[in-house]
Image (tube, rainbow, N blue to C red; front, top):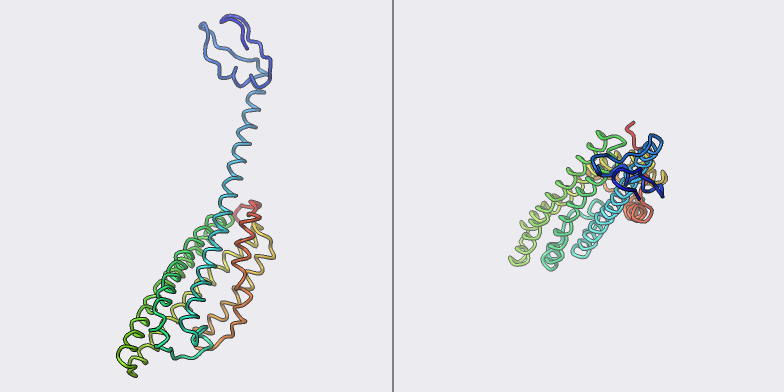
Length: 287
């Protein structure tokens, strides 16, 4: 509180220092505090500003953690559900890398709605992959922006290849329906097998940029310690096995599902971990 316009200003509380420092001129004079009090005002304002910046930074990290965890879970569940749908539509052709090369077109025709649901699910998965790559880039760019950008580019390529492979799936659906209507001609079976192989190869090809991008991102997680290193190592080992299986499949060699199995639960586990525990902001400098 202050005296009259020409009297001295008396402070009863330390918090009033801020009000005095912003006081409007009164009676042709400006209210000012002493040098010591002014230094205290400036010091307290700097502390307050630092606290606000730290609070904003913490909120940003927490929000990024929640979105990143949700992105992992979105991609995991859409991919899992799409695979389960396809296994119901083509029960004899699930995991085609170790199964027969021929597709049952009668199954395709009888389960047309499941094939369409798979196309929708895989398209959502492709979008989810790109979104996940974007969130990983935002999270890890401070560790090494160039590496994170390359990883994001691989995820974009994976999403594009996965979406493009759905063209072959739709073509397979049309062939299956025509096959059932026309009385099962042999030439349509041959064309159907080609469409099926194209669909499988497109999805296998999409795994290659995924593996390369994931290796870069999980390496940055390992270096930054944003998540426990045991999770980063799990991701690196698991995706490296997926890369080996993908390369074998691309060259026509059958690979057991157990090669891929160590990675299968990883994205679910890391998604839940990030949602519940968050990510640390330690060691964000580029190295």
